[in-house]
Amino acid sequence: MTENEMLKIAVHCLGVQAEQEVCEECDIYGNCHTDCKDVAAVAIKALEEIQQYRKIGSVEECREAVEKQKAKKPEVIDQDFDYYKCPVCGEYIWATDNINDHKYCLNCGQAIDENLEGMENE
Image (cartoon, rainbow, N blue to C red; front, side, top):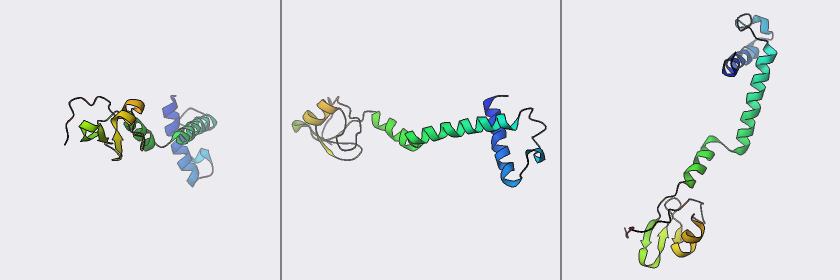
């Protein structure tokens, strides 16, 4: 039996256990050919893994972090003076200070595309 099959059974068993006290009363008990202790061990392992992922951050927080790593072009304020604006938070950026040295917005952490050639005032 695969881990995913055991997890499916575990979810069902936990749901049944919420309503009943004894596994033997469950319809799956005689048909799954596995010990409830094994199913519980798989469920516990999966829950522990979920807890570890939650310590890292939510799915949305991880997606936001990945998005911040994708370099975006800043908005041109005054190209003659290397003056730009972060495309995410709107913080003003001096290209000579922020972009060339850090390659990210010092305010929000958004990666900034340092290739500013061909950009014009908007």
